[in-house]
Length: 252
Ligand SMILES: [Zn+2]
Image 1 (cartoon, rainbow, N blue to C red):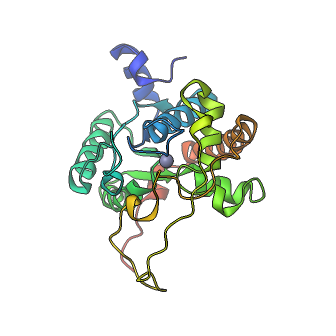
Image 2 (cartoon, rainbow, N blue to C red):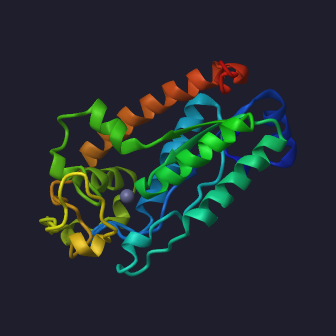
């Protein structure tokens, strides 16, 4: 049975939608990931996780949305950024299109942290409309599931962990000869409890928030297997859950 929406005919889509109420939506970004990784890192990872878990669970998977909220990376060439307002509207309309065919549960696989606040806001609004959306991010999952696989300085943006996942998925577009280890520039205004409107260019020269040279395909495979297993569990649980049980509680 096909699980990728873009491979189905409308009749095949009809068959899925009339029997199921759940779908997967991968969302990424197109932004710098150091000198060694492709700009498409986040959307390629989102697509890979989404399509693999769709195959393992039989849940329908949508096309990946490649652009996200990335203006903090703009000084690095090739970054494409969408404003939070436009991004939220766009994702909302994708979800509403699914709702027309009876989908009420969506698993968003978000591979770019900059999208999270806006997606979480949207998910709350969708719940008020009878729609339950969960958001999965692979790196906090990997942090919990595999605490000893990488050191903290290997776990940040474009560092060894993310580069390892790229090496496991598509080594032909990773250039490890260009991988650097950077010391993040501290800002003297950055005290406890302060949020500053800084960009990646304020913190790094090459766009790597720490150590990337220790990346390996083998570690990337370990990460992928662990997070895919977790995601499969979540999708299977959500599949069984009745939408009525996922809606907001009535007034006390
Ligand atoms: Zn990334």
